[in-house]
Image (cartoon, rainbow, N blue to C red; front, side, top):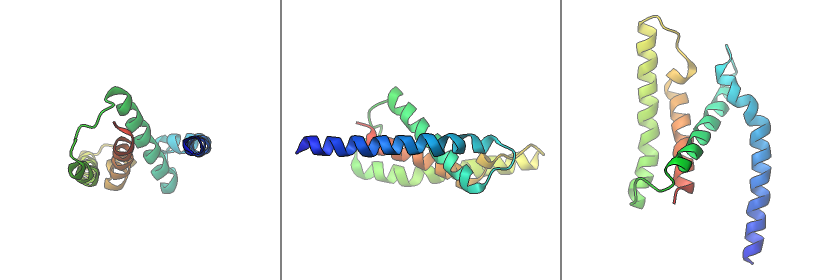
Length: 125
């Protein structure tokens, strides 16, 4: 019975990987274009966060917060903190006449941090 679960996970994993490579390739490059669609940019930042989460798992494969309730709290609060920081950076850049990137907004910073945190939450040992 265990082999059936492994097969299902492998099939779903391969399908998701193909989908990510097809859609994600375009979405990952979209935030760096002049004026991409906000939906495509959101997808790009979600993918970027997931990729950074995977990279962080490679570098630090264990959970940094061990207690389950604190892990959930961390998953809920950290993206808000990152989003707020990115929003503040956008305001700071705008006041100085610097170019404000999409990443310099709360929503995009939040999405990237949330996807990074979800990858770590789900797959860190």
